[in-house]
Amino acid sequence: MEGFFKLRKHDTTIGREIMAGITTFVTMAYILFVNPQVLSATGMNESAVFFATSIGAGIITLLMGLFVNYPIALAPGMGLNAYFAVIAATHGGQMSWQTALGAVFISGIVFIILTVTKIRQLLVRAVPDSLKLAITVGIGLFITIIGLKIGDVMKMQFVGGQSTSYTPAPPHNMISNTDWLPVLGSLQNHATQLTLIGVFIIAIMMALRVPGAILIGILLTTVIGIPMGVTDLSGLQHPHFLPDFSNLAVGKLSLQGVLHYGIISSLFTFTFVELFDTFGTLVGTANKAGLLEGEDGEKRLGRAMLVDATGVSFGALLGTSTITAFVESGSGIAAGGRTGLTAVTTGILFLASLFLAPIALIVPDMATAPALIMVGVLMMGAVRNIDWDNMGLAIPAFLTIVLMPLTYSISNGIAVGFAAFVVINGILWLFRREHTKIHWLMWIIVVLAAWRYLMYYQQ
Image 1 (cartoon, rainbow, N blue to C red):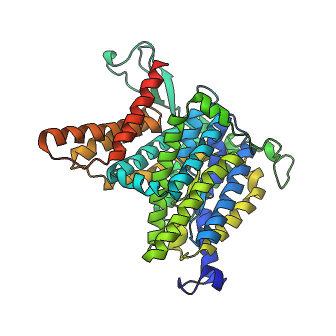
Image 2: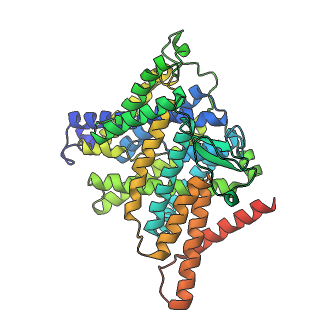
């Protein structure tokens, strides 16, 4: 242990590292419950997604601990799984879930190439910090809306030019006879009641700084849902250690389908969002642990990026959305985790969680919806660091944030926000010679995004 993980060098002990790994697992284990629920909207089998989530998170986290010696855990990321579900939804999706897995797999290959060639670092420098933060905030709002919808707290109601039961009628000239508007769910609905109960449980525990608040909240909400008739226990009538994994999605991705539907749009979003999300998480958590100092720190960060990139394609092969570094790893670091032994402990617990599958699969949507809403709260905190005094940054950031949830598309928010940044600061340079510097890669990204939308609306 000492020779492999260099425990003394990092001023830590085996006991401390193991406890840190357990803390990290408890904090992020909610993904075992949430990911199957989110991806099931695409028609994927929940047992298959649970298997892919558990195995994928376990193996890649072990790789991070053994290959990089970092106390950072990885699992299918929130936000990217939401985007996956939207483009591959059973009703109205742009492509099948097999094709979406193919897009994730190819984006992982692209990610590996970008990491090895160090283009990844160049891309990170090209985008202003305010826009990176805006992407995080926008995804947080996007996740919150998904949570509100699956928890029946928010519904889309056909207006038909008349007022709804739950909201005042908007001015007549603001709606047409074929508009759908978001409205509040009925408080007489047990599903809505359970979601709101879950929100308050998690919110109170988070305010009290209870470790693993989200996971505990999901479990308590599930139990409360039993007498309310929302939690279905029929899956436990024939108890067994492992669920039926006969419908696994391992190797069922479709590469041909990706090429048929057009690879640029899906690849751009998967790769781009993963790029900045991972970079921020890895740098932030590693810096908190004091692991970025010196030349060795930079080399290890490069290896960590390579492991993360490998996890993207590996997760797609198993049958889940993008596997990425989790910001919840910071909880383990705060508990004293400084080496890969922390990650190894977390990885082993993820693999062992296969035996929790029968319990995980009875968790209702209304128990995971509060978790999505609270994850949105955590991601919203990045808004404070956006430069709101610089209109050349503030306006693009604002458009990025609001268009993601309002158009129900992460890629729309990124495309419009980036285009606004280039146009506004380009014009400022022409007339005032004052502007925020525009990296040449930003021009290329905006041109590609414009081309994508022009081709889309010509179809």
